[in-house]
Image 1: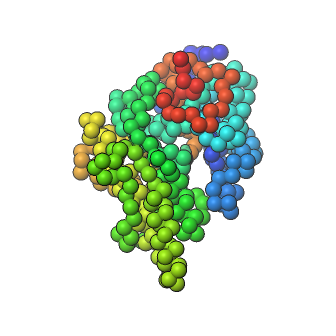
Image 2: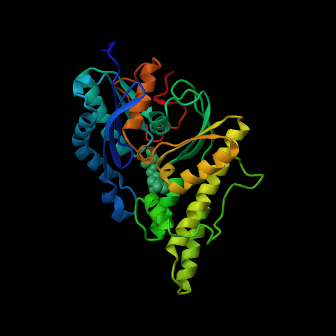
Image 3: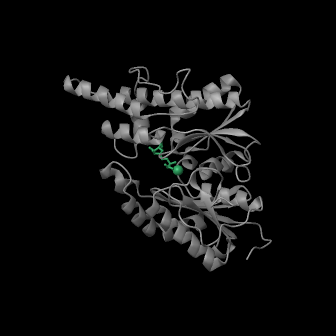
Length: 352
Ligand code: KG4
Ligand code: ZN
């Protein structure tokens, strides 16, 4: 079953609307394939789980083929398989899990269940090499917004410093995009609209930044409501809605809160590295302003390139590769989907 060959780890991702396969060997991304069903969800303003699952089913084989060709790897060269087993949309996770099990079973290779959010953090290692011994990781995705204290990503427990009380940052982008009529997915649409806008045109609330507030907890639903009220008020008065200015001001409010809290965590833990990952880390304003404020504070900032920020299979392969090289035992073919898995460790289920 296991071999002394150089590991070639296949990563499988299907937790939301992206079907991703990636191949990683000893920290190096060999190649990947990615299919998205985003356009099929656009008319509904958000991901429809049943449509996502069906699209994964159709995309699995051709996308795996693209990844193998991109990497110049033949199916029998794969030594290990890693798969997102949670968190995510249950119907969607099941498709990738079934595919990964079939591949692992037919090739007689070990199978590792991976926590999707650990995958986001591992994506950065494919671009910038191993993480430092300790760092603060800000995860900003469509479903999660968390500040984590991370040591060895696959061996140490992951410490949650704070999460969001309501909407995730990406969810706020998606909802505000919908109410500005900019479509789904909202992040890139807001970002495009905001490019021509004035980020100081509207002063939207920056929640949870007062001295008595929980230092690492986020809340974005009030911000979304404030944008909705602004739009309603303008429409009722018969005035034009300055979409670019609202998009830029909203983006600025999100970025201010994210960067302020993440930097606070780095300082209070006396660390020197901040890692920002997840779909929202593709946002140009967030990347620019985090870089500027980290430079001012003497903190090293690591952000994966945008194509590795949004969901992909390479990031799951990266976790699998780290697990294999750390000597972790496989999760086995019996692993179940865990749609609401909390991030305590990179591997699922958590080894006892
Ligand atoms: O990490 P991800 O691909 O999927 C989840 O794990 O949720 O994140 C998707 C989220 C969506 O909410 C999307 O609107 C947001 O990331 N996003 C962005 C950008 N690109 C994607 N948000 C802001 N700016 C972007 N450029
Ligand atoms: Zn994700």
